[in-house]
Length: 482
Image (cartoon, rainbow, N blue to C red; front, side, top):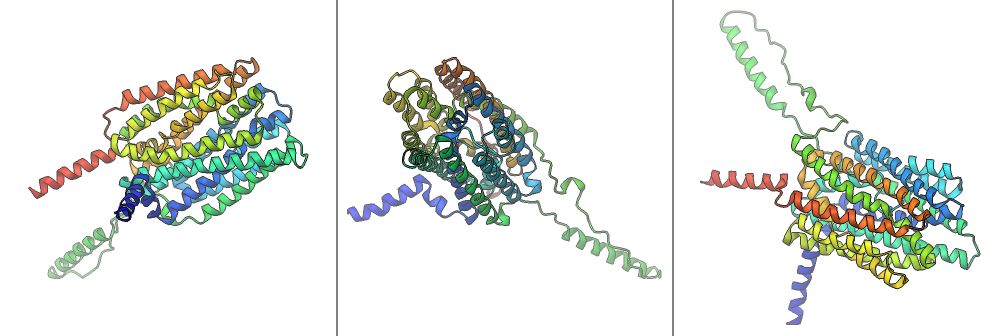
């Protein structure tokens, strides 16, 4: 009896968690998820020590905040250029270029401590001050995953894509956190020397990601509409034979006119410039406004500032910080599988809102306790639902626009989010310099909660393009059978 229940439970768990979906996915899908793990491992490693590294080379709190904001401004420029032209230039080429920029940034941080050189490297390259996505990668990968997966399993694929990213962040934080502390305490290295080793690892992982991009197949490139010219050519040949027959009956010489083959209209030629339908532009505008508020809240308290807050207020060492953020990242990673299961029952929008709202409340509570354990508890509680909205949000956005618009739309959304996020670190740096760090947490929680409520009000009852198309197809099938 118990033995017969195990396969049933295993099938249920595999379906609910989306495990069967990711295991049956294509090789390119698995490579893209692996790329995200490697990239977020590097981001987690650098995020833990970024603010601490800048402080170790005598950079003030205000200038640390300015540094983070300028890093995000640079990301806006790089991401906008690369994602807008990604489908025209080639998605794999764009991913490889971004990986090279990521590796170059790591090398500069490894060998230089000059503030303005580091600023230039962070603007022109790829350095994440928040531990979250930065650069052109996410928009291109999400668009490609949407193309490679069917709507039925897309939420599962995005859940595992997000989970592996969070797992990468967790591993990067805990491994490099303890490595930095070991180098300082056991090898008597200075903090600056230990942190530079971490950036050397960051540069190496950029090369690993470059190799993974090279392994992707042509199926990752955007689908091109095929023109049906052959039928037109054959019809022209029939018409030509008819003309020849008429000429022969009239006694005129049989001369075969030159066949006029159809040529593709200029509007159908592949262009590096994206085009959006009016409906997509409308939905994009609404989402950009809402995501801007959420991202501004996130920009006020990125992971680098949170680690700096716990270090300055509670004097936590790198190893303890690494363990703390490892726990929060693992919890956030596992919560994505729960989000995928919930979204199948209550829908994408409600999952996004009802899971994200509690995390906003716990975020606002983090700076209030004077006890480190209580503050860490609020941080862990926040992580339980912090990322549960990500996979449903990605699936919601992918379904809201046309397939050939996804890369550009997701690129624009990421640019808007990063641009909004970039204003936060400057404000937090100013508040930290005034010993008012706690205000940043309260503002961040309020902005994120406002985003959740506005999202629910604006899109409750919304029908996506794919849902509408499926209903129309079903209606036509019923009418045809009748």
